[in-house]
Length: 223
Length: 311
Image 1 (cartoon, helix red, strand yellow):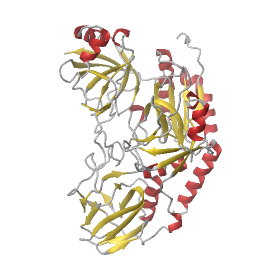
Image 2 (image 1 turned 180 degrees about the vertical axis):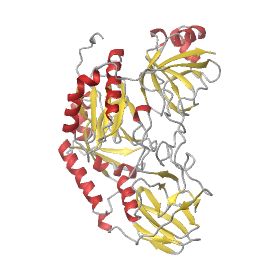
Image 3 (image 1 turned 120 degrees about the vertical axis):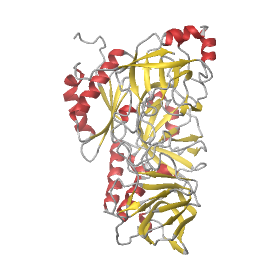
């Protein structure tokens, strides 16, 4: 493995009495993402009883800890101790590639017209561009199972809606700036909707509950 | 069995929260006033994660089909069991056929009702808490309504207890919330940071009607971002009590329903004051006061010891 070209050192800071924020970089970047991912899976594998939860995202991992079992100083020195080992590639589970059939356009694609207008592209072009890339899951959140996928082709990057919708249908495929994602539940939505999928991204009745986790890959297939 | 006759404004099943799944976006959906919820379980000698009802608003009414002991904590309510009026933060014996009615909420917003028995509800992702937005957990993944029935098994008895009035936390407006700095507090001008949280300035914010179980929106003095700072951040983890400032400069206090946020996190409400967030009613006044981390930790220890005195 070559060493990362990103010189950013891990920075630890405090987030409230029971939170630690471990930052790996400043931008949305695959090498930063790899660090977050390695760190998260490594820490999780330690099964530390003093940790309540980890929230890995684009450039950081937030650790929620139990103040009855540890404190900020102790847990952060443990993290520093483990830094090298945690960031060593190869700790992470194999990422899966999920192919997601999407019905682009039509009445459910609330913003397809608008996206075409903003980008000056035809619907066919938008679909071709959106379904051409193998995306990386940078983080899962907002609602359970919602994947933040990147990176969207420059040509179809559009801003979020100025006023988010209060409710959109489950399965809506949205885009915003450099990201794309799928809303697993009927929920508020600020991204522009260009399609719909029947694939279930979250099933609370069956482990592992979420179709995707950080580092998995997604390819959309136009149907 | 218990039967809901009237749901009040809203009633849902809660517990101490769904933790361990933040990496796949599953939020805690915990009881908002954890102190009240914990004291409820103490009064009833219940498990610390036992399901209980979290209720908003007057009019709530429930019929008991078996003898059991119950307790109410949280918001102060004027309630009666048939003709008998009930004390706040106390347990009481309910006989089969009796009806509990809440006539008025006199201080605070959310109150908690628990029972000495095992509510026949499934655990979803390890928990009883209701994720209302995603319709899972609790009672069929939804808030309760009139006519809903919940079986209660393994009913046991405990001596009746009451929390001394002076031990009941204050829940009325104005709410003074202490905060510690969040990762993006320096995104805001010094003047804004001062106005927002300086203990001397005592800037009042008003709780918006657009608040819900996900977040409390405030109106009032808008915060100004420093020049050249982006108004949204690359989405990142948040914890309960995180105060986010979206582009319009008005604070949103996040509760227990999100794991990730995309707005600047100016601060976090200290843990000792998180319970108070359950009692912010639209139109209430909120005043923030910035404190240092060691003071926040000391306040939490006090809060924890106060709870331990009930055990």
